[in-house]
Length: 181
Image (cartoon, rainbow, N blue to C red):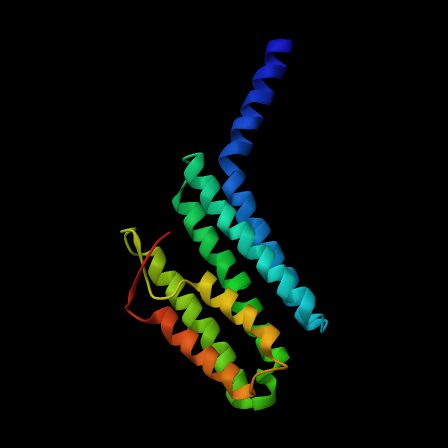
């Protein structure tokens, strides 16, 4: 009986270990989802914090996957789906609620355009070979820059933020190569 319990425990630990990166990826998604809810509740500073915590979870999921040699196609796809929420939708809504809403339809358009470019970039990443380079600005970087820019809203002209969203959108889908670190 003890041997059977030990085997069950060992198998459970092995299964958890193989899913550690995916669990961290889902933490990323959860934080991004809560960041969106925070924006909807006009808790913009909380949203900012949650997006940056999602970035930490995103950083660690890849590190864990490589360390435990548990990278998988499922994990890659799951990571992209979570990243569009945490670094596409959440930052875009944060900036829209913070400043871009003042522009009316153009503000709404470029908010959605940013999200679309991020989704396109992630889809393209998922179907290309891993060659040690990113093509275009990674959505995580774009999302963190967008989120960080929120802190400058009281100090910079609103046109800056509209311009930033347009520039980051095009950088995500641009053909330039960026070495992975």
